[in-house]
Image 1 (cartoon, helix red, strand yellow):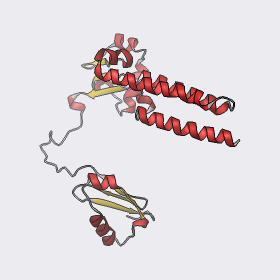
Image 2 (cartoon, helix red, strand yellow):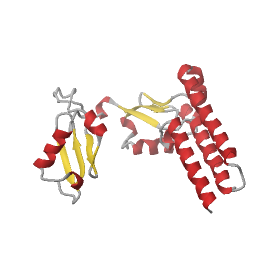
Image 3 (tube, one colour):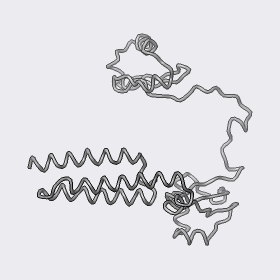
Image 4 (cartoon, one colour):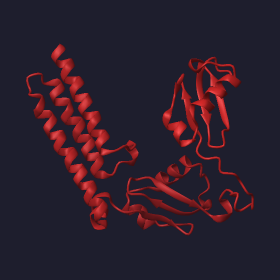
Length: 225
């Protein structure tokens, strides 16, 4: 039993490392080659965990080969547009200037119901509001609304806005985030002053958000703001 547990832990750590090397993507965003590799890795990893008599390397080596192939293919795709389209496919326009391209839909094996479902997931319930829709290589549908259906921007309204930078987490569950402090150009002296002003200890802070303009929101662990 102990051997099985140790083998499982080793394979788990190895798979996590392999996936980190391959990069982060959600399952729905995987290219075809990435999806194939992910499925094969999961299948290969299950064998050495179940077969105690099988050498561990017999399961790890094929996974290493798959990861190396995926990295090689990714590198070639960066250099060759033809290879990129061959492996990952290319976008297809299925709504062009407000008109549905039935031929393109059939070529992508999509129904009108599939199209409407994807649009509803983007809070688009009226097909007349869509000027263009494109099926991306990962299978997702991107939509561009007609000019009159798009939300007005500050530029449209001629409104001047201040860029306060990217809001970041400075404190999470009583622990400082060095990344957040670096992005917001905040030092520990400012954080300590905020704690003093709010009469709270570092360990009693659930979350502290801030931006470059030093605007912040502090949430205590007792859920009070």
